Amino acid sequence: MGRTAGRTALHALLARLATELELNGNDLVIDREKAELLMEELKPKPSPLQLFYEQIKDCRKCPLAESRTNFVFGTGDENADIMFIGEAPGAEEDRLGEPFVGRAGQLLNRMLNEVGLRREEVYIANVLKCRPPGNRDPRPEEVAQCLPYLLKQIELIQPKVLVCLGRIAAQTLLKTLSPLSRLRGQIHHFQGIPMVVTYHPAALLRNMGNYERSISDLRFALRVYHEAAEREAGGEETGAEGA
Ligand code: URA
Image (cartoon, rainbow, N blue to C red; front, side):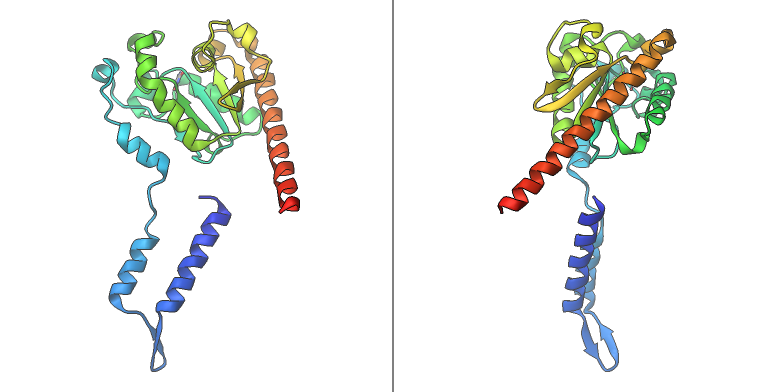
């Protein structure tokens, strides 16, 4: 919940509390049942993304369910403006249930820090939620079963920019067979959301010669994001003037 939404909810609760309080002598008192109802209202409610996770976490739609240790849903800010999409969990991700926590993940964290982002303020997910044995490429039938989960995550998070980490994520979302070299350096669109493509951190670990290029790609994604945010703010202002 954003700070403004949180404050609004708190104000609403305080207003409710004020209406329920009664003066008893010099004391302000509240009926026990009403207090319990209010306490119930105060309990944090699961977000739509958490509810979605609960719905799908025991998925057995493809054989990867047999070999997985954990279903790796995604991590980060549910209201993130920037969403990173990788390929599939590796061994460490499968063990810990969180995307990009192995060596590639450490490199991703370093890349994020280098462009002024923190892992907690973006959202990170994969095309596949379960680890393909031996880290082989995802199979088309696995992608076909799993992709709807990622699409729903994108729909719920509504990021302002998507960053595909590597060929598989980019080719899957853009429905293309173009090589990574052709996909980098341009603004694509996925269901109206600007999308930028960069190297997969695991590929960078094999060839750090492309590291600076990947940092340029992330800076490019940030520019795309700032432009989108400015356009949106401009649109909102125009809307407000017209109202
Ligand atoms: N590679 C990926 O594509 N995703 C992860 O979560 C980890 C490694």
